Amino acid sequence: MAMTSEELKASFKLAMRRFPAAVTVITSADQGRRHGMTATAVTSLSLDPPSLIACINRTTLLHDIMLHGRHFCVNVLRRDQAELSSAFSGAVAPEARFAQGKWLTSTDGVNYLADAQINVFCRKVAAVPYGTHTIFIGEAHSVNMCDPIEPLIYQDATYCFAGAAAGQTSCKAGAVNH
Ligand SMILES: Cc1cc2nc3c(=O)[nH]c(=O)nc-3n(C[C@H](O)[C@H](O)[C@H](O)COP(=O)(O)O)c2cc1C
Image (cartoon, rainbow, N blue to C red; front, side, top):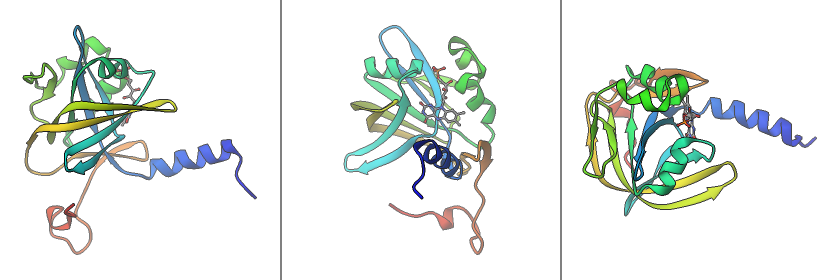
């Protein structure tokens, strides 16, 4: 028997909990405001040009700032930055969030986390509305990275971190090139 739409939504939600994702804080700025928000719905789009997408709920404060702003930064968190993720997903009021962590300002006027795993600095090139969200497409113009590779992962509503798969001596050896 086919699932009702409510059953499908419940199953989809449970399935997505089993979908591990790297935790990021996306930062942006418009003419008067700077803001940051935790997001996992972020993925690479293409190498040519280097670009990524971020899916942002229309009800969030970051959404409107990204709509008006011209740049954003994807800060991928490290495994010891779960507290920062909580702060940027509602535990701390918007204006007080940047008090936690080492934040600097890029030449674009966007805050970035100096000790993040990765910073991807993007120029916003498109905003595609879909249902409750907008898909923002960013073209990367600069990237910072730090070692070791130990990103914070969110899975089954829990923060975790990746280990090497069986037979691998390190996560790097198991990485897929794309
Ligand atoms: C681990 C985690 C991942 C999240 N990923 C997203 C996401 O990809 N897109 C989104 O719109 N909200 C996401 N959220 C929810 C926002 O972080 C949360 O709604 C935030 O408090 C709203 O932002 P604002 O206070 O800036 O309005 C996520 C929350 C958590 C805890």
